[in-house]
Amino acid sequence: MAALQPQQYRVVRTVKLSIVILAAGQGKRMKSDLPKVVQPLAGRPLLRHVIDAAESLQPETIDVVYGHGGDQVRSRLEGAAVGWILQAEQLGTGHAVMQAMPAVPDANLALILYGDVPLIRRETLAQLVAMAGPKAMSLLTVELPDPTGYGRIVRDAQGRVRRIVEQKDATRRELKIREGNTGVMCVPAKLLRRWLGRLRNDNAQKEYYLTDIIAMAVKEKVKVAPLVAPTVAEVLGINDKLQLAEVEAEYRRLRARELMLAGVTLADPARIDVRGELVTGRDVFIDVNAVFEGRVVLGDRVRIGPGCVLRDASIGADTQVHAHCVIESATIGRDCSIGPFSRARPTSQLADRVHIGNFVEVKNSQLGDDSKANHLAYVGDAAVGARVNIGAGTIVANYDGANKHRTTIGDDAHTGSNSVLVAPISVGAGATVGAGSTVTREVPAGKLTVARAKQVTLAHWQRPRKQAK
Ligand code: UD1
Ligand code: CA
Image 1 (cartoon, protein in one colour):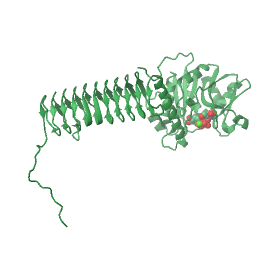
Image 2 (tube, rainbow, N blue to C red):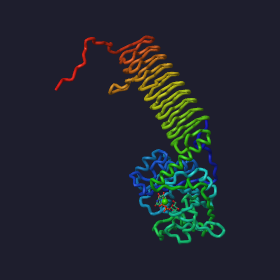
Image 3 (tube, rainbow, N blue to C red):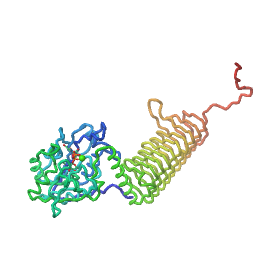
Image 4 (cartoon, rainbow, N blue to C red):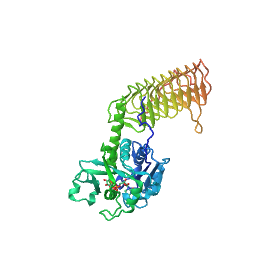
């Protein structure tokens, strides 16, 4: 099986790295109570994606400059191993980086990232960092058909970067430049600190522009190495819900592409959402509109039908999951048949060749090899043996209104249609529960147990007639 997440490897670097993520912007255009950087992309906050990319570089420090909705941002990223730095007032990108500098050692390279640019790739960042050094900074740029809104990269006749001019400060000639500033840069910390101290806000926006350090570097003859982003997608910033959806679509394409390159057949790469880690065997087929969250493992030749949702699940080889199943925190064995319309809830374990069919819900239960619940059943808190047949409409009544109780069903037992097993109870091996029974006591092994009213026929009964008005 091939893991689709980038493999972790040790980064060997001579100069240590400090990463600063700017995330203080409000994101007014989101028109949302949720701060922009915690809006979900593929089910996780935008900022989480950026922190993951940052962590993959194994830096010495990661600091996030936050501002708007600070509590919400921090609580939604609980557990992230980053420093949190408050920028109470947003006075510009240069001002934001300055807030983080006390956490950045002089000897390090400082890499600047943005909390609203979530698709940035580790490979590109690693390349950018490699281009910087104690006496050289590097800058990630992007060639755009329409760079409106971006700072423009001003180069000289030899193609060397001279400075960056912001859209609002640019001349008409500069506005024609199609190379835009992504904002991502890698700068020796000692120099960065010095340059930030010299920033002024005498510009169109009255802001401290980080971008002004480029001209300072050029003036001091510090090398400015530009890297044109290999793909536009990875430098896409998000300001509104439209851009959020576009980046989500891009993310979807990327994940679908990885899957197909790993040998998975997708009915439609535009209609699959992989929001976590998906590990796949050979010759897996996934039909349209499947959603994968958390860590999902699909064995060889597994088929996933249309409209399925799988979260933290493992599916054994040759198992078929038919249309519209929801499987969460469950382990399913080999050669099983699941669905259509089945639900496996947390901590269910299905062994090999198990069938669960339409409108069957299994919760916190184990089903042994070759057991079947083909239609309309609820199996909760139950240990079910091998070759058991759970009839249509069987309900394990596990809840007495206050507590949950367990049920055990022995090997080869059969439960008839519409039977209710009131827990705690055990059904012996080879037992049969008659259809329509409500059983509240032990069901002995190997015997038929029936617990229902006897059928009677009233010979002289007459149907009431409508009274004449
Ligand atoms: C910035 C760049 C511009 C570049 C563009 C790319 C500057 C001066 N300009 O412009 O050259 O083309 O990004 O999108 O750097 N932020 C803070 N605190 C602040 C200001 C900004 O944390 O005080 C954060 C924002 O949350 C955002 C990022 O920095 O994530 C960029 O800020 P934004 O105001 O969008 O900069 P732009 O004007 O778009
Ligand atoms: Ca912006």
